[in-house]
Length: 342
Image (tube, rainbow, N blue to C red):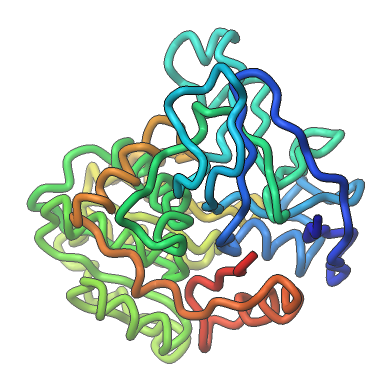
C-alpha cells in the first residue's frame, strides 16, 4: 500500500509499505479522504513546530475517513462497508489522566502523526489503516470529505467547551485558517451576539464572512484595525486565538473587556505577552489541546445537520499529487482545507 511520509522539511515522499493486519478489537479501514492539518504543514514546511521536530521519517495525517474493510471477530459495532470517521486520539485508558476523564492529556497518548514522542507516532495518510473499533464513528449520511472534518471540528468543540457559555457574548477570532473558520461556525451556533475575525489574506476573510462572521478585518492592510474596539476598556468577551502569532495575540488584548477569556489554539512557538495589561484587566488565558469525547459529538452534529462544514473543503487532490496538495494547502490565498483522495 502507499503512504505519505515526511522525512524532513520539504522532503515528502509517497512510499510503499506493508499492509497492516487488525488484531482483537480492531478493524481494517480502506481510507477515502484525508485532510491536511496545520500541524502537517508545519512538519512539511519547517520540519516541525516549536520544540517538536522530525527526528525520523513519519507518516503524516490524522484527519481521515474511510470504509470498513474487515473487522476482528470480536467487533460487532461495525460492519464491512461502513463509512467511518476515525478519531486519531488513542489514549491508554489506564493512566491517572484517563481515569479522570482527561484523555487528551494521556501520558501514553498514541495520537496519529505526532513527532512529540520518540519514536514518533506514525500517522494515517496511508491507503489502509488499522484502528481500534472505539476510534470509529459511523458517518452514514455524510460524504467522506465531511467525515474527515470531524477531527478539526472536535478541536474547536473542545476549545469552545473550555471557553464556557458563548450565548450573547462578543467573540473575536484571530487567524482564519480551518480552525479559525470552524470557530466562527461554532461561536455562531452557540449563540454569540457578535463574531469578528482577523487575518492577513482576503480569501480567508471572505470565507469567514460566508460561514458566519459579522465583521472581518485584514490586519495586513490595517495593522491597527482592532484599535476601534479599545474604548471603555475593550469590547470582546472571548478571544479564540488561532494563528499562533504573538503579534496577533498582543494586538487583540487591548480590545478585550475586563474578565475576558483567551482561548489559545494556535501553535507557533513561545510568545512574549503584555502580562501587566492582562493582569490589570483580569484576563484569563486558557490553553486548548486536542480533544477526545468531542469527536463523536462532532460527527453527530454534522449528521444532524447542525453544522455544514463542507464549504471549508476548497480542494481535493489524488494521492499521487500529495506534494502538490501540501503546497496548495500552504497557500492561504486560495485554500482553506485541502483533502487528499486515497
